[in-house]
Image 1 (spheres, rainbow, N blue to C red):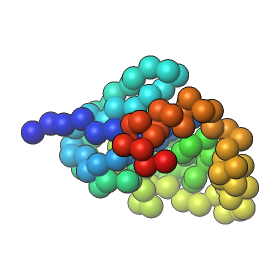
Image 2: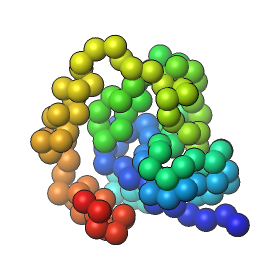
Image 3: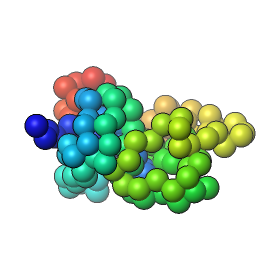
Length: 125
């Protein structure tokens, strides 16, 4: 039975979202982007709290989550595919940590995005 799962998305440059429930191939992932609801279809089973590509990413391009680069695509990744250690690798420097520290301070998160996140995942934030 197909279902819809919420995706956590904080920045329009993100190439993936974190899913708030287990997703099976063919399920829909719903998330807010540029103030509108967007939906994508999963092309494979993905466990809860893992990432799904919301934009196609070419091998060697950065993977963005919450406005920060979390790794580099080790292969071409289509929209709807699982993003995890099997298809990304480290940037090999500390730049990602610096970017994540900026994000954690809240520099890149608007109050609207925080409100959307907290409503979308039952007030987790």
